[in-house]
Image (tube, rainbow, N blue to C red):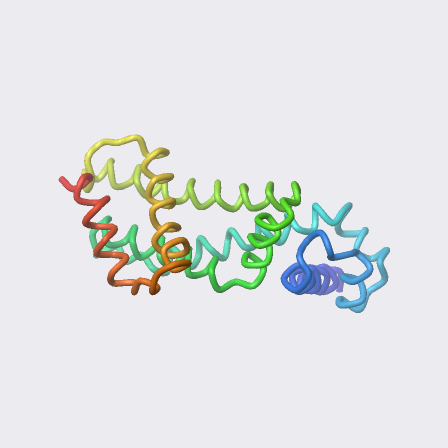
Length: 190
């Protein structure tokens, strides 16, 4: 029963954060949406920050799962990194919570939200870095700084997926893969 209540609270908080943002969400709203008393929330979470952190940790797991599903061990590293990055950013672009939280960071700059979004980015960068390190060990790519390379890969993808379409026609997944290979991966190929 306690697990169900905790799950209800997390689902309600996710919904509230997605609709209203972190700053505008209150524990009263979450309690009402979860159909529990406000005190019940505090049996599981000490604060709204802790609740958001739990949700983001779950989201990080979902993103990693989505990326892993995109990877095909029989395909080359360069293709897999593209597939994983595209899936990660598609997930981020379509998930209501990340959309709302990114909007809140941009419009309001709520420190707590900035921190959890940094945590999300660090987890994504760590995941990409691990894949780069594996590829270096397998000699699929030449030796490079995995941390900087992961950062550049992610930033290039964000630029192609999010930034480009602000003023231009959105790029297809195929075109992004082509550009990624042309400008980035050719330099890493053995």
